[in-house]
Length: 157
Figure (tube, one colour):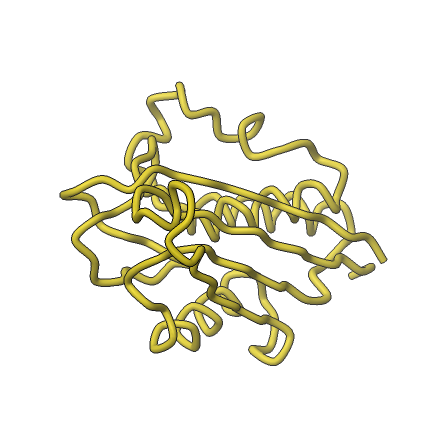
């Protein structure tokens, strides 16, 4: 078994959609980013790449490459999953922490879990999504940022 950890943080700005785990969450603010800014999927990519010994998301999808401008992060996950499979590996489970003050994610967690499970090819019971606020503290607590932390295991395919 291999274990990978991923983390991502994006500034929230007015006028951008908020994508979390491949689900568009209604919000006045969305993540500023070169792609769609989906912090969960970016952290998933980093966790998968790390567990497979394949570097990080910035090496595979640099944010200064115009080919990735506005690109959906689901595409990144699909590409990374192909690289993981080429290594003879598959996910064993995925565990997500998402840090966002508002909107509250309680009603979206099951949709995010379902979408993420499909993207990585796991039953929903092997994907977990937890949402946390920062109790008003720091950039996340002030509604200026969103972050995600992800742990994955990879096992032989």
